[in-house]
Length: 290
Image (cartoon, rainbow, N blue to C red; front, top):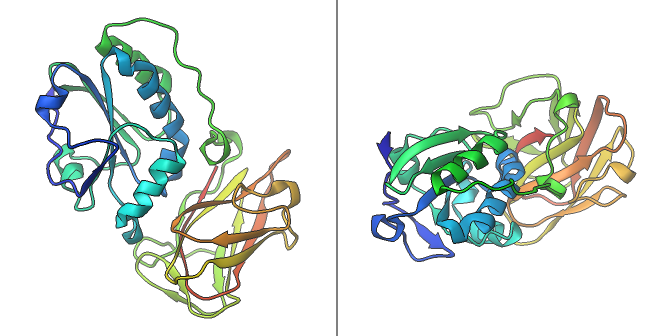
């Protein structure tokens, strides 16, 4: 067992004044590392949010640590918007310099660290899943025994269709991107270490995938919203549209975040997605699937 590291080096605290050993003494602490564009965190967040509400009066303190994956995620206003969008009311510490990430020796989003009332880390959970065990661990640390909370994610937070998910996360920048024949950028794109940047209106990205859901992490380097069009096998997606796209396939890129483009009803098969932007300034970072 190791002592719960301090939250030194924070860029900012949201929903709370800074918390340290004095404020956390005698509490059970759940630390949740996240980044706002991570689909794995988004799908796990309903459980963390529910545990915070269900066990707060029993002595649980949940602390979210936002450590950014992409450069644009350093914007504290975007973190603040994500906190509001996800209805997060527990303390969140912004870790732009990776000081807290390093203190914990962390390597994952999401990552949960469970600390007992004595201030020592008693367990971890990396990635999605393990919710039943994590809740049992929390109850054990709190010294309580009750039925688990009922959780069902909606929209982008809904659990993945793991049985039909065959396409892995794909980064589009040259630093982590891997060449392959399942995607192509067409018309006026420039590759950077993190992303593809659109320099002329009308550029598109085509992706062949096999999954229920298709998401794309996007940012906007201009001052105006950028309309876009999504096609599925060269047709508007209709009932297969994601939460950020209409049945006609139209959507708007505003602030940087993860956009859900496709959620297919019924049978899942290999499909081709094409997203086309009406104006330059779009930045495309990574595709994820569910």
